Amino acid sequence: MKLEINKESLVLWIKKIIMCTLSLILLGIGCGINLATNQGADPITVFYDGLSVALKITAGQVATALNATLIVLVLAFDFADARKKSKKNNKKIKFSDIFNHIHIGTIIYLMILGVFIDFGVWAYGLLNVPNIMVWIFNISQIGASLIGCLLCFIGLGGFVALAIGIDPWTAAAVILSEKTRRPFAPIKVILDALTLLFGWLMGGTVGIITLFCAFVGGPIIQKSAEILDKTFKKMLKSD
Image (spheres, rainbow, N blue to C red):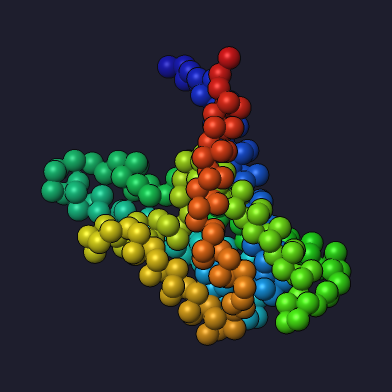
């Protein structure tokens, strides 16, 4: 039997994968810049930073290792649930049941983020940005951090808009929400708070950009996702 491939669908997915990859490249570079400026970062990046200090490896390597671990754990939980349901309903386990929370975007996230966090740190080092102090604030570093935040917000907004997978941390929060039967939002807030606390305790930098991400990051990412969603739909629209 000859296997027929829907070329239109294939092209659509290739475009989505390319857009997802570019979005995550921006996110990784932005996170790397924020780490290099030492003005703080979002909670999860602070955790990467703290663990990299403790383990004496790069933040990108930490990100890749942690995200891979989370993906394996989420897959293990999904497999256990799928196996339990299959026995209860006397049906075979479906591939989609095992990959209930992990999708292609999640795998791209794993492959791209850590590499480009380290690239962002390296690239910022090449710029040799001078220190410009105004009172207790390093204006040049804060300015670079704001650019890093912008890249993060655009990159994460694009990733969310494409909706071809969630990041491993969000997948873990969804699992916890389902297992504890608690709302997702407070679970995610608690997870972010814990990653920030433990990251700081291990030596991660918490600063003014951490506060900036906490107070304005969510609304900007949401707006970015809305704008990019419309843009992507126009780009992906078939003739």
